[in-house]
Length: 420
Image: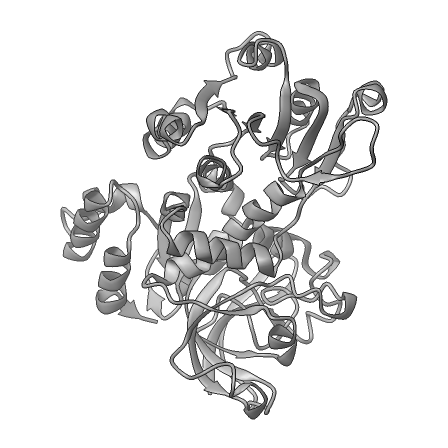
């Protein structure tokens, strides 16, 4: 079967190509990919090429397919897996396979599977590790977002606290504690707010910071102070840009007590150092945002590491259980990651979008792989709709959903956008 896919050959060398997939083996599954959301990790892989830990050294000779936040439908199932999977099933994939200690992952390491392709061949490793996850939702984009949401879920589970005088690691954020999400209104920050408010283990205080009023206003309109209060959480949005002392401003929100848990959502040294400075005794700081710079450093107060028992953790991705939890919570309506999406495009927009991702404002960029469409901000649909009925209809559907992407908008796009 032929596929069209974006493949990586080296540093900043991505190519949209059509090629033949190998014949399916008995331990493989053939599938079509409907949607993929572009992750900053794909930008890092593209910018680093073979130097990236998950990209093979011989990628110039044997290019791999990029993209790892994808959702699609199974077309054919090899005999080994015929009792577990069926043609027509929707699926999502946990790319962090951890197969026999390898870092290999779909979207980085494999020639025949990745999110930015029309059709893929799912290798045995994915099924062996339980990483091919059946998805029963209506919206493909929700299946795509289950991967980034699982990263957020994993972040919360990785936090820990140690009761003084013990060596017991109580995993997770402190229930009823104080939580700060710094630089927290980007796409992943929005997901972190959603999870903090709607997860069973909640903080009593959630403070979210950024330096952009427009981003903060959008976040506050989606995840409202009122909804948080109804869920037992006091939610505060703060712009720290104009503060003469951001640490003092943050500490004021806790009455000077400090924060039990801090998530740092941007690889910015001053933000990390703010997070360190606002921790309370036995506080835990999670450096969520992975930097591209291999020499990235920040100062930490090691006096407090020793005497105040501060903990520093970092998470990169989630595991399969995190992804199952994400899919379950989305299916139950407890999480709604639609707010993470700000742009939509077709497979032909992947290369430009991936290579320029840090410079494109907004949240997640959602790709429909069988379609041809320039990357377009949802906020621009209405203006474009004045002269283009396709975008006009998308604008109406987005407006009906509070300006957010929706299953109705997805169905309209899949039925009416040009095929690639």
